[in-house]
Amino acid sequence: MRMATARDVAIFREFSAPATVVSLNDSHIAGELQSVIEDLPLQVGDPVNKGDVLARLDCRDFQWEVERVDAQSDGLKARLDLAQRQLNRADSLKGSSSMSEQDYDQRRAEVQALSSELRAAKAALKAARNVVSKCVVRAPFDGIVLERVAGLGELPMPGTPLLRLLDYRNLELSAQILAEDVAALPDDGVAQFELGQARLPVRLRRLVPVVNTVSGNQEARFSFTEARPPVGAAGRLIWRDPQPYIPAELVVRRQGKLGVFVNQGGLARFHPLNGAQEGHPAPFDLAADTPIVTDGRYLLEEGMSLH
Image: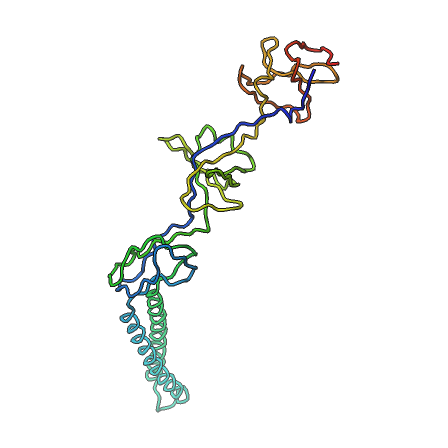
């Protein structure tokens, strides 16, 4: 009789599904102003860092608006200073025959009105400067330029794409898994992305809880734990079912049931395998160090000595 532990004879089913490397940010970068494009310094394929200039728009009209509002603020400040000095003098004369209650209230109201106007002008100045800052379109993330959508001299509307920018650092693997195979995903989420001859380790981040009614697939998103392949690379997601199986050739039938013989204190004990099918590997729940009879099993009966 020959025996081997359940750990040594166990086999694990391997599953696969089509998978593609995708970027978390594939963005069409647009301007927020309607103005002529003065500069597009980048070409297709150029790398950029977050904050780099992608485009410059003609900003003269917006800068003039800043100057106008700034001058208006200065005028209001001067008027407010004068009104405040007049109110201070009125305070010293209040109650005398030379300063009526009505005149005093009028000067106080003028100070309050000019204060409100100045606050509004300062807010308008901040808004105008914010508009000027939008004349320079900057990269919202590190990436590469995939496409120049607009050209120099064009007058795009707000929201019109100028360039297409791809984030090549924040990547995920998108796999389309048959809904019936989802249950076989390992609990720890560990799998591999097969790309050509290479297998790259990945880990499940999220299983989308929606089944495509046409394909019967569920999308699963995986994070790369080591090397990151290029965006758009297509291959196969490979994972192993964590459920161990007994090879079909070790399964025998006794009293109408399929199972295996194990060594229990030197005696053969038949262990039924629930769900086993003739000619197919069968799932089992034996401890990993359980000794299983591999040779001579066909002649065994329950309780026979294995010595």
